[in-house]
Image (cartoon, rainbow over all chains, first blue to last red; front, side, top):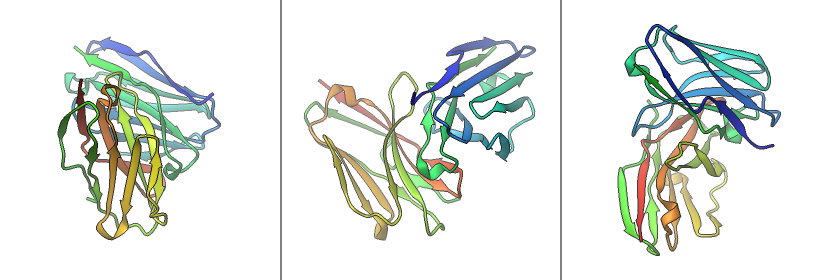
Length: 113
Length: 113
């Protein structure tokens, strides 16, 4: 199994809603990542988890809250988002260090209305 | 900031032409890794190649080839005999530290029949 699975694929939410994005991998990777990608821009790192512990937070607003319940799962909890948060949210995993290369999921396309 | 620069924003060629995508990077790291990813319209980032900073051998994989020149900090990607299915956005990336990937702005490649 060499996949990173993200759900849902599409999400529309209001600015007062609470929702969660989910990511799962079964490759035994011990590092997992959330990236945000706006249209016609490169992916930008949001969070890194290494061995289920948050190791990097790229000064992301608190309305985004990551969670890593175990080595296979990564969640991103969303609350009180703004329309400018609309983007493609990509999850990735790697063998501990980025030098091994990431395996990306297909992303969740989020629209905030 | 240590940038990754893909100077070509968009390239359009006719099928069967060869096309080269340029990538120039900055880094203060002694050891680092370079990558190319392909992003089709579906959104998933597909891994194409990984190269470490000590390995300057060029690589060929089918119609794809990569030219890494450490002296000029460049890691260019050539598609030979391009096909319509090669149409996508291509990102060059390098590691920054142990866990972060820094992406270039991407090159949108369109192969016309």
